[in-house]
Length: 116
Length: 112
Image (cartoon, rainbow over all chains, first blue to last red; front, side):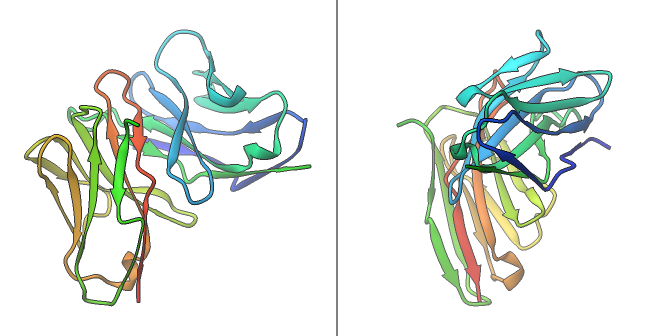
């Protein structure tokens, strides 16, 4: 079955430190991978995606993600965390068995808390 | 600004009442989706639509119906609301080329 896992419910980081939010996936064929962020009482906003090409993908707000095919991972990273990065982060993968659709399968989400 | 518009933003219903959540996008996207978000459960797909006149069930369709009125609009109807339908509902549309979603700002529904 196709799936996405975010193994950490919450990640705590001190401001200025690097952060990593983990994501692993299981799909058939080539994965199309996404990261979204949700700020309180808001909809989800697109951060970045991997379709093909370089394994290191750069996105909005200084975030980047590294695609690792052998480990089936797509971890979200940022070199220096800001308090304003505190939010709920979702990893998603395209469902390759969606019969002509390209619907996404979402992980359960990871809450990032950046402390001053 | 281009995007996905959801109405209403908040709603309180009594058990057994009905209501329709509205969603409209102005990006000329073909695919549209309805999700619900519950604590600890992430996003669960309710229904989706590839184009006008086409709809399909997602992971949790029971208790819901949808209408793809035209390319822009995709509505979600609760015929007889139940407390288990208390949730935040998100509509999303999807571009044909990049596969990513654009989400609306959500509808927070409480059923008492």
